[in-house]
Amino acid sequence: MQTTIDTQQLKAIDDKLSKRPIALDPGGYYIIYLDREAGLICAKHYTNIINEKGLAVNPETGEVIAARGKKVERTATTLYTGRTAKELCVKVIEEAQPCPITMLDHATYLGREFTRAEYALITGEEYIQD
Image (tube, rainbow, N blue to C red; front, side, top):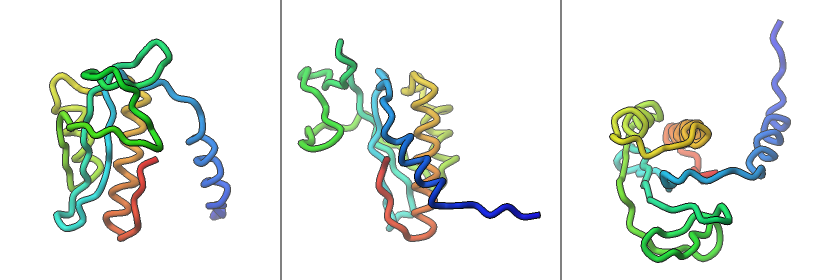
């Protein structure tokens, strides 16, 4: 017997979980995007420091790095690229020494985002990082 999957219900679950508070990784953050011409998933890694309020700040200036709104121009520490989510995960988590990810929830988040980006690359759909 095949179970019918309610995709709207699944989307509602994910949307709700996307609004939960999260602790930021002191190892840095990633901006994920697609290079469709090259057929690549790209992840720029940026360093940060987490201040006493739990906010990410630029280690050079001490300025808060906003998640939305005004963007601070920064230079990425490293650019990782991969043709698949798995290839990119291996490069970021297994090959980078030391691993720039210091929190397991951040690693699982990146795995989910890399998978979403791969799907968008394959299907031609728009990819917007969560």
